[in-house]
Length: 530
Image 1 (cartoon, one colour):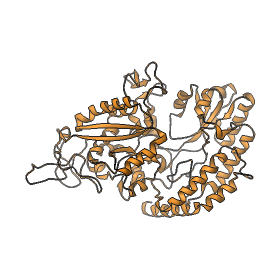
Image 2 (cartoon, rainbow, N blue to C red):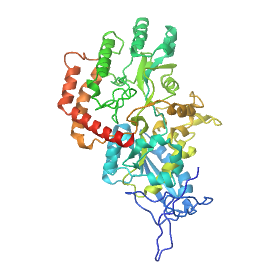
Image 3 (cartoon, helix red, strand yellow):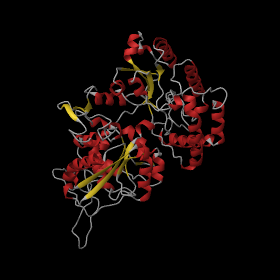
Image 4 (cartoon, rainbow, N blue to C red):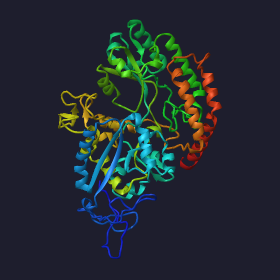
């Protein structure tokens, strides 16, 4: 697909006539750069939104510019610099643009990105979802810039055409697109990853497991046969809640108003923690805990579920996440064969599709940032430099024809110096295939993403700015009670930390106000979009 270039601005006077860069007319709030010639060898003239004639452009002749990119998770300074240099070889040749990549560990990620956005520090591109602030709030704060013109009429049209039309609504606010949805898994899957060898040993048919009640029978058999093994692990002091809800933008660990069953068609926003479904779940987890099916002292464990399965200490771990390659991925992480079971039909929510890459509100030349972002989404070589780092140092090919890779000898996740997080970059489906995964794994993702039941609120983005005090107060309440209840560590029906106390404190701190505001905004959105 060709990326059409928009002749947007001509300047007369003592200067020669010059054209804007190839990303089309800058949207409201973006900084124009009228001093750059926009010509492109071999591009045919085409229709442009403005009706102006498309000019040929050679983007390598633009004025020099550095695009600064912030990405979450760890990276050693020297390797990150090598990645920046390798990426810059591509972007300099195409755009006369240098790339400066900054990696920030998860522990300080949200703080560092927020500081960069609010302090005026140079920043051009970042994964907006990862700071857990609603897109609407980022828009209202001016911390992301609109990119509609760039995508529909300018240099990022190639990316626009590659994203499903229905998915753009998840990153659209007030008619403007503010982020490119990551090309990753986009469906909600709730299930359990199980040690297949143990299941085979015990004659357990995991394909027959469809509900939590079915799964309880499996845990009972594991407990009886392997009394020294935890039937169900707790993952870093947390147990995922097995309820197919649409959290309406909230993180699953702190849900302040939701469509409790996103597959039912209901558009009624409820306090999830006061629902019959949540009560049934936490009562079941308490019962499982009393029977020894859930690891004891769950709230003090800092081990991941996969580590516990790898060590032979646990049989299974609850998971949530949009992945058709769950078995291959967790098998690799655990070092044992994993078989997964799923408890609900797949469904689609804004929360899974909306994770996106955006242009920072303080980008000095957003059109130049968009040129690089489009290339990150469409250029496989550039995408894999960012995702996997440096060939021969952080990865190597084991089957170059099929683009299958592994760590170099003596290198592993602990010492590679560069976290991969392929799902968190713009286009995971361009990434090389990790050894042990099906060669066609990304084709599987395409098929996977095409299915699923859309939530009735698919595309809705909640703006919490009018209830920030209530959100803060209720988040503290959730942190106080939820994980103890979720892991079965306390009796939900009496005593300290009970579900009744939890609900009352939520109500005292304004949960009903948050739910009402979500309902109001959702009703308005449904009226305008359905």
